[in-house]
Length: 401
Image 1 (cartoon, one colour):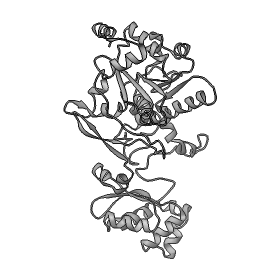
Image 2 (image 1 turned 180 degrees about the horizontal axis):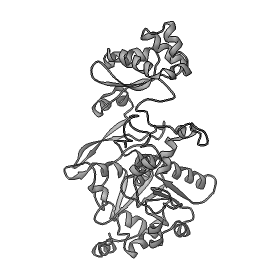
Image 3 (image 1 turned 120 degrees about the horizontal axis):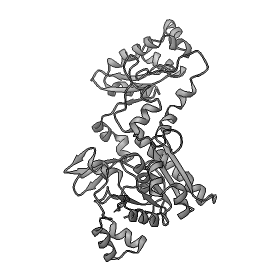
Image 4 (image 1 turned 180 degrees about the vertical axis):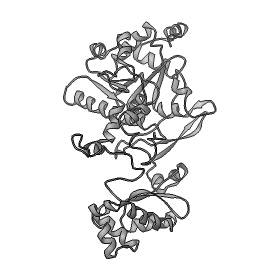
């Protein structure tokens, strides 16, 4: 079930997390060949019952639990936590999203896990991190987006702040957890540093997105802090979403002096007066509404295909604003196999983003979607804990697995 030839072959990961952010840390590791063992409650993880579904099966579970071996264990039982400790002794990475207080109650803190396995890399995902006054406060990626300032910066200038329409905070947290896990594994396996605790808050990855905005503001100065500006930038123009003559949209960002010079030429607005207002950054920022309107009016007279062709020829960064059908039909997406249609016995074909980035020799793959509840109980418990059929049957009878 695991990818023997993946770049991370030989790395064994235990995933005891739930919902969306933390499990994706293990998902991304599994995409590149790690042996990911997912523990869920005997009744199944909550992710199986939320989000989009088809034929009674969760599409999100199929995606997030791909490439994982799935076992059940009731970690609320003391014996279940004993099983967890036995498994921790045999893995390289542990991924979870339990609060510090819960780990204390379970006797499963980082210090206790490290005592069992000194080489363990333990990835802890939480809304606000495992230190500070909010360490035990519950939350999710949505709260992280708001808390770290992204929501405040999203929306029209004269409108309310807006949340993104996708679970941005959750997936970005998964990526940062992946980075932390790989850095810690390199430090252990190459530099002999031993195990580490990787403390991943959900708001700090969002804060990283806010880096350029944060750095551009002087908290000791007199200027107000940056505010939302729709799809535009206060520090660069033209940069916006523009409607075309065929009622579609394109995204354009051509804010350097050379780019603006080419835009003025192709729009026929390169006379002395326009040059004086728009050619240099400082001047065009003083006339940003006028330049943005000029570009919008020119695009509105052309179809999406026509406008993109002209801007590409002029070496102006431009892209169509794809909906999902347009994305899947795009020749670039198809050429790079950026979306994989993963077969599922109940769901049919499930489109999933292909593992990224692309490695030349050991690219990531999706071998199978999220399995049924307890699909690998017999296999994993026999392999790691030497359980026979009778021991597994007894655990089932006890409600343990």
